[in-house]
Amino acid sequence: MCISEIAVMAGSDGRTVPLNEPGTVVVYRRNRGAWQEVRTLPFALDEEQGLPGLRRTMAELVTFLGDCRTFVAASASGAAFFELEKARCPVFEIGGAPEDFLDSVWREAKAEVEAQAPPVSGDNIPVPVETSPGKFAISIKDIQGKRPEVSSKQVLQQFIRRGGFLELAITCDHLPPWIEVEAERLGISVETEYHAPHEMLVVLRKAREGACC
Image (cartoon, helix red, strand yellow):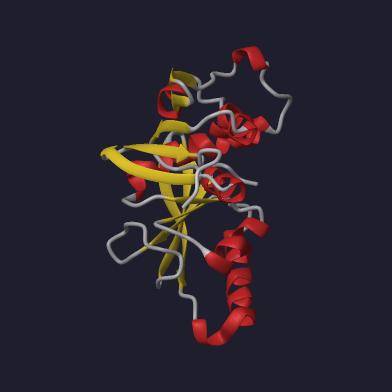
């Protein structure tokens, strides 16, 4: 896996587009702190080809990506998303121009790789703060600004899985894809809203016990 390369699904204006829309996959490489475009691939999914055709197209995309295993699109879902996940190519859903998010995505991907090494002592991992009974908050953006070696998964995955909260507010610059996967698996709702061009609030809410529709 090459964490110094990031693939972006881009439209004609260079900004991200959904994975299921026609566009160009642009691979950027980080060199001495700067990003350079190193290769491109015109890309479009043809629904008329059915699932076998989609899988062939996605296999061609994975071959093109090579060692690059970080992918950014405005949105991704369905079979195409799962084909990338199956290829161990995490997908970041971010809207905008690459120059606005490549560094933050690179830091997140780098932290994920480092998280596979011996874990950081639990005493050193920041935890969400309870702001009122059952409601917690944490800023991943602030944590990674000070400690880029700490990933969002290290901070939040076990906390979310334990489920000891009614509401969890997360300040970040993008929604880590793994949070959506965990929330769907656990039946937790996810709400997002932008507070600034590069800052969003993600709120996870659990259904109250005994609540009925």
